Image 1 (tube, one colour):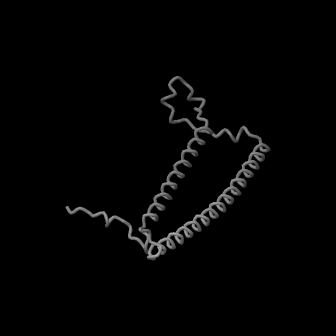
Image 2 (cartoon, rainbow, N blue to C red):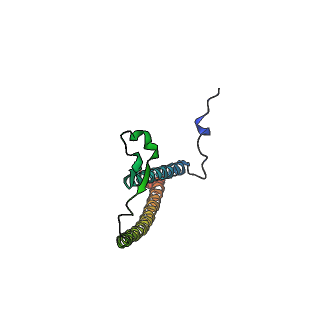
Image 3 (cartoon, rainbow, N blue to C red):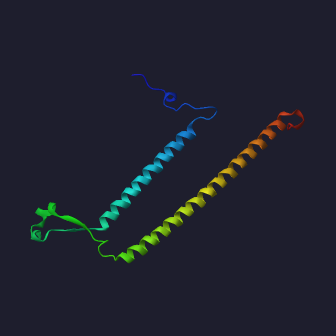
Length: 145
């Protein structure tokens, strides 16, 4: 079998860029997506485990209950024990937290945009300074002896 060369496995680049930055961005976003989905799955699993009460039917509460474990049913209890007024205050608190988090996301987004603009400005200034320095070095009067 012929070995596949490494250049066939790379993503073709567009323009002057090598394409590695795009590949890294795609892989990074894919990893972030996977981590987010996995963490949400774990949180939902734990919330279901800790808010679920497993009880057996009253007729099945004998010594050999392991044989009848498949007859067990689950019952959600956390909403039965809470009064409606408490649910409303809890909902209001959660909504306030959600609104606070949304505001934080907007502020952080604005700050990240500002920082990105500042960074691109600094890169542009550095590129201009390096071009000027290269032009100075190319002139015979400014070459070091």
